[in-house]
Length: 184
Image (cartoon, rainbow, N blue to C red; front, side, top):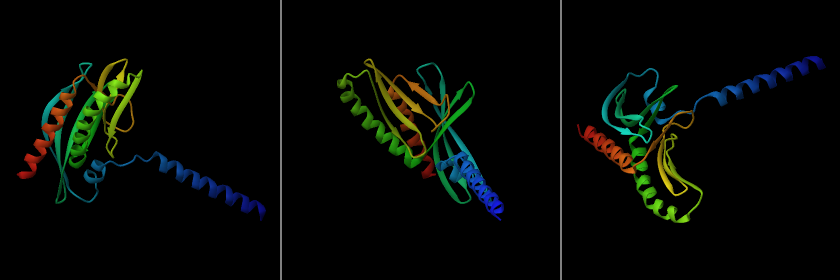
C-alpha cells in the first residue's frame, strides 16, 4: 500500500513538473499574434511599403504598414523588419502603441540634453511597448547612439541608428499612412 502511494505521489509530481515546463516554453503572445492568428476566422494581410531606415552599420531596415482584416475587424500595424545572419526580426507595432512610442521619442529627445550633463561612463534611456519593442539611446564616453530593439528576445534584433530624425520621420510616415488608410 505504501509503495502504491509513493508511486502515485511521484507520478503526480512528475506530471505537474512537466506541465510547468510546457507553460514556461510557450511564447508570450503579442497584439499581432492575438489579432492576426485566430483559428476559425478568415484573416487577410495587406502591406503598404514605407521608406527604409538606414542603420549605423549600413544595414537597410524595411518598414511597412500591415493592414490586418480578421473577420470583420480591421487593425493596423507598423512593421519594422531587419534581416540578419540567422533570419529576420520583425516588430509589429499596433497603431495605439505607435502613437505612444512616438510621444515617448519626443520625451527621450528632451531628456537626452539632461543626460549628457550627467557625464557618466555609460547611460541608457529607453521606452518599451507592451509587446517588447524598444526605442532608446545610450551615451558612452560622450557619444550618443540611438537604437530600436524589434523583439523581446533573440539575437540580432537591434537596429542602431545615427540620426534620431530617421526614426522620427519613420514614425511620422507610419502614423500618416495609417490615418490615411483609416479614412478610406
